[in-house]
Image (cartoon, rainbow, N blue to C red; front, side, top):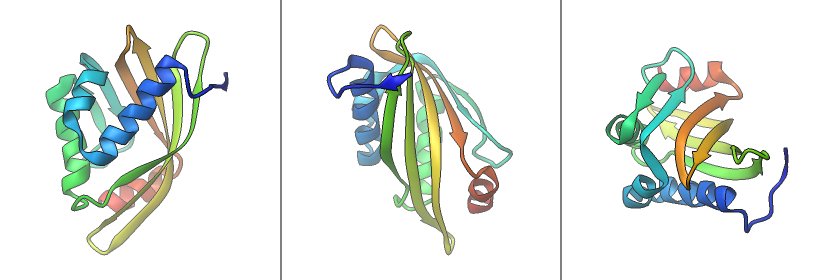
Length: 135
């Protein structure tokens, strides 16, 4: 995988997705994420699991926002693309919830086909801290 220039189509799609996520712009997310998309969140917390389709994925995203009273932000740090068009994004999650503070790294691998996210797989750097935050 190599660093991607800002003009690359799949990398730009991911960048727009991050901006839309942080802005709560579900209209843009619904255009970028395919209706049949699957989303995978690791661990054993109440947020862990596999989500399929807009309703399930956006419900998951909504819980992230509502349970942190809108404080969850994903600060995009790095975007890399493979020759097959898959995109890897690394970001720093920050949030506050029930007197706890989250500040950790996450990587998401995006499978993109025909200009839409078909699959998103999260990898949490410190899964123990992530799960303690959501407990």
